[in-house]
Structure formats: structure tokens, C-alpha cells
Length: 123
Image 1 (cartoon, rainbow, N blue to C red):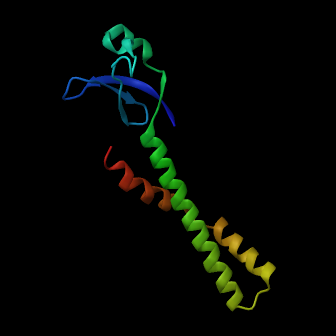
Image 2: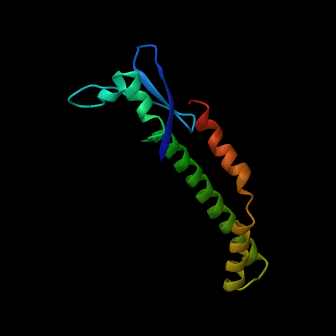
Image 3: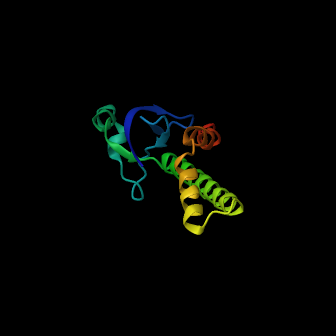
């Protein structure tokens, strides 16, 4: 997920690190010929890149963790509701209606918060 550069700082090894608006950090090294970022070597070069976007892999990881948690919760809610509706004697169409209603009524905010907490603690 692309995030804008907000500022920079030097790490303990004196490598430049971009501080992204999402709160994550990303090294911006200049190691030619593999990585060519000569702009990182000067203050003007770094300042000219503030506001440009870098791909934040931590945000991608967090997004995937949230998506997987939501998918799992939806599947479990639908499966439980479908089975319960069958035990109550509903027809297949009625069971599907109940299962879909269970997914629609999921409170996703606590689920999203709990899936973010372990991922974000190491940033």
C-alpha cells in the first residue's frame, strides 16, 4: 500500500529512514548499482521527496491480516447460522437467508481492532 513520506531520520547505523504518514518506517538507502537513490544523500534531495509515496509493506501485511480475519469471521458466522437454521427446520433457501443475515449483522470493528493489535505492536 502506498504511503507518503512525512519526514526522515537516521537509524543507529546512520542509514536514512523515511517516516511514513501511516506511522511505519522504511529505509531509503543509496547502494548503487543495486539501489540508486542519490537524492537521499543531501538534505535538499530528501526534502524534495517529502510527500512522495513509497510502498509500505507493513501496511500490506496489516491489510492482509484484517482481510483474513474478516473472511474467517464471515465464514464461521454463515456456517453456524446455516447449521442452526437447518436444526430449526428451515428449508435450504431459508437457511441461506439466515446465514447471509448473520454475516450482515457481524460487528466488524472489534474484529478489525483485534487483528491490528498484534501486527502493530512491533512497528
